[in-house]
Length: 349
Image 1 (spheres, rainbow, N blue to C red):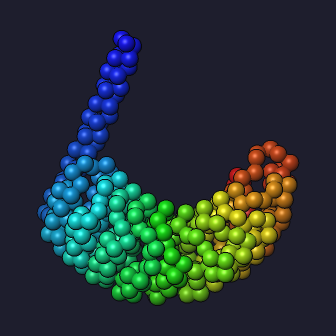
Image 2 (cartoon, rainbow, N blue to C red):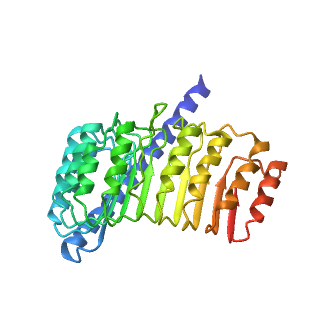
Image 3 (cartoon, rainbow, N blue to C red):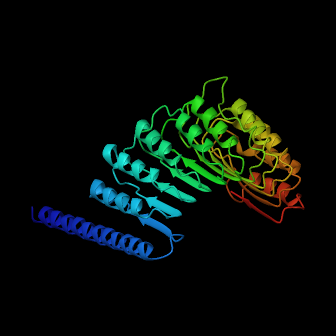
């Protein structure tokens, strides 16, 4: 009995210590944000306002305070709102969207709202208000692990149409649900941005593709120079891998590509189809490719490295195949990569 009480007391002390540490972190971050705001009120509006408040308990009150303050900073040009794990929903989401509508001079906006309680309607509401920020050059939307179901992306398409200066765009809705039509709309929206050069698409564990439809269409991506795509855990098969490779081949100006497709169903044939598409990107210098856990037997992995010979301009290669180091397969793949004399650096995992 005594041991049980002692254990409970120890657990209580640990919990209490963690709460004190969390409160100290939150208070420190709150104070830092408050100081930034005071400096901005007095000085240069070009300064970047960064508010980082993960796990903050008084979510609605603090969101209301900072949104009211942001509205007062009408000349603000760069804004980062990091409200991860904040339990934002309903009224708080509406408050944020109303504040963003007033930030008409922003050129840089980064919203880090992962792991909240934002649903499709609230997400659309925030996206729609961003259309008022028509000077934006960089827009980052990180809304992973919220409650966004069957996202169609019509609001995103309309918003990006109203951002003629956009050069950098990132969207991450990991563990939400994007419809196949939503994938079409996201592609169309990006293609309509005449100055777009850098795109990040974070769609891990987001889709359930139908048999004969892929959704993405990169035909309008000819000016994009840097492309990052996360499509892990989406049941992508060899035919979808071929479609993806064909789509990426349309990115004729592509210099840097990061493509993560782990834990799908691509198999060896699909991987080769995919690479045949990437080979058509004649300006591709830096390639990061992750295709482990796709049902490819270790003894066949070296065949993928043989296909890499077609990468005419790539000098930096990072490839994740899930092969064990120092095995026969690993050595065979490494040997094939050594034959690619133009490679200045390569990394094999």
